[in-house]
Image 1 (cartoon, rainbow, N blue to C red):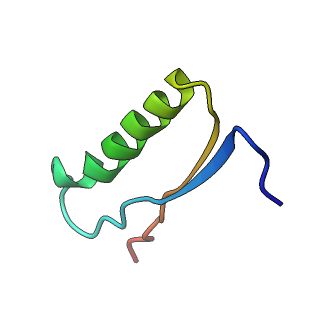
Image 2: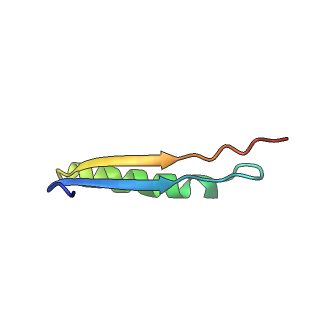
Length: 57
């Protein structure tokens, strides 16, 4: 059930197979800016982020 003044955001984090680069942080940065703006606007924000762990076997 939705609550007025509250928003939930799910961020599917990076699945990194190679060396890290700036592109891996882009989505995280964009969602962080969005969260900060919404909180600044008076909205209660729940941001959940998934980080996939690739086991190097």
